[in-house]
Length: 326
Image 1 (cartoon, rainbow, N blue to C red):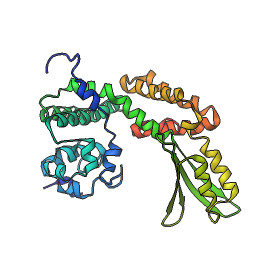
Image 2: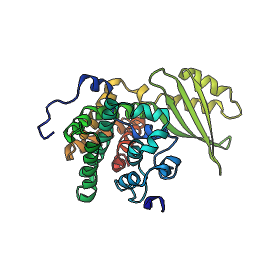
Image 3: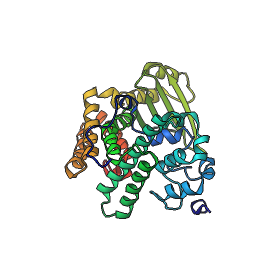
Image 4: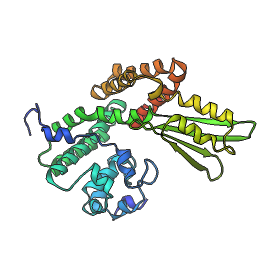
């Protein structure tokens, strides 16, 4: 019964081939579970994929983190969806692209990707909760499981993959967060309140504006355009929903999008500070994260928007870093 459903010995010098280097990317588990139409913290434990899994794999992965009787974290779901023979056959195309299992080489690379996520959580737990020896042991056991499932993967290779690719994950998340801004638009005269998120696509400069009308059942509307001025022109057409003063506020907020307001070296430095912590987590590198946040916040706007984005990056990487910026 699924209890959870009821409630090489040598020192590694260089092991990654050129072909693997080309294929490497750090698995973004938020993006991975989104391929299944799932979202972190919402419906991971109750879906067709989880219920189809064999007991052996369900129980093995469910006790890794979170509740010990549920598949309830991104990592647990990713492991289940890759190693369960039943679930791997059900995976949508987007998941197969991120963790391919169609040949021996791709299976090995996917094993390295999953191992690197496990190693990342091991690093985080060891820094923030070093007394949780049982949790640390479970992560070590799971690294051993990855090696057993892929006889040509060692723990040293997993660590090397982690160290070579963690920066790519940090960069991906920072690019996403530094290209958006969220704010409330409260028009007292019109007695109207919107919660707005404005997103800029760093690849093509396209702008998207989501505005939520609060109610018992909130309604979210979306406007997209090829550029900032085009977006403002589209907003002007919605005269029953936006006033000229609203548009002025939106224009001002658009200018605070960190990727627009700050030059690339500022963003690169933010990535480097976070990467330094993940490569060598200690008091100094952790305090450097706090210093970076304070430096951004101290610049007022647009610095405060950048500080908020920096905090979101840290929280997306690890819940325990939520304290930075609070």
